[in-house]
Image (tube, rainbow, N blue to C red; front, side):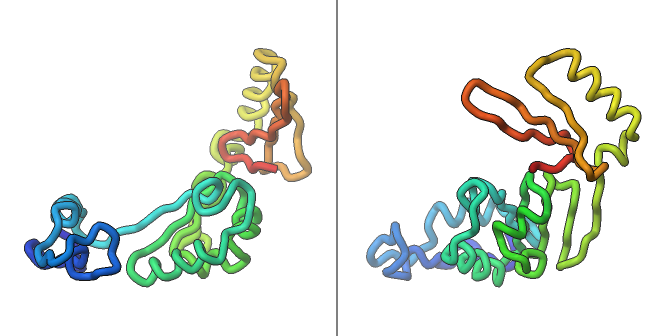
Length: 181
């Protein structure tokens, strides 16, 4: 049981607070759902991680004031982290320029970049890990195997993009460790 959870057998609030959905009028004992949650909770501190696109925001859009307010209220009770596949600048566009101050953890680029308590703590790239020559070789082999991929290099040597042409759309797909355009 987590230290901040009421002990087993203590009323949970679902039965005591008339505004809580699912309240049973007159109930004073803890509900089975809360008892089960207490039993399943890991000891020690907890962290809630949220995906950005399609979870906290509509895809590629800014966070709503209501969602932002909710997360800041939740952050008063538990550590909050956000995870996104986009680069840091896009996460800033969606969640605000102060994203690293508003959340305890920020993981853009699928976690290859990590911020904790407002400070950059880790930054990795596929080129740095595998080496430029191996990455170039992999991209050449990929281009031989499929005509769906058009491979080009960006000005930024840390960024590799592959536009994927489909019957109805064009998508930009980044390599592991790359950045989405």
